[in-house]
Length: 154
Image 1 (cartoon, one colour):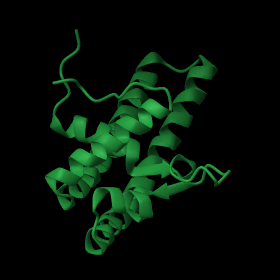
Image 2 (cartoon, one colour; image 1 turned 180 degrees about the horizontal axis):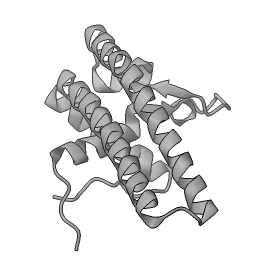
Image 3 (tube, one colour; image 1 turned 120 degrees about the horizontal axis):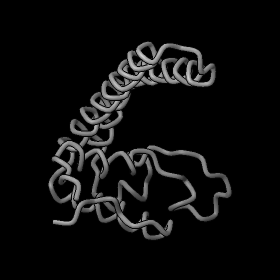
Image 4 (cartoon, rainbow, N blue to C red; image 1 turned 180 degrees about the vertical axis):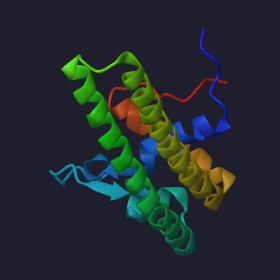
């Protein structure tokens, strides 16, 4: 049996899944599945009781993290592409492939760490009640999509 995810991992699962939601989820009349920031969506703001200040703070947190997240994602993508190339060639020394795997996983960990820190900062902007409501909204969204929530059961 796997180990129970720690708090940052649970937080990442909870908020990452709802960080940017499909517009069609709450606006059925909109045919496109454009992405919207939940903290700027009127229905989310109303249902969560999100203040204008909170919405602005979440946006500022998101915007301040975005350059670092994009850079980390680009680095990860480049390393993964290089690893795929080496694997397809089948001629690289195994130690070279292993070293590149280490670099890929370190880049993946760095991206995950930065994303989780951003989500933690966003989590702290919300009240405990808002976080509970956000989790319920996420669970409802997952159910509507026909997926079980990935939230660990306590």
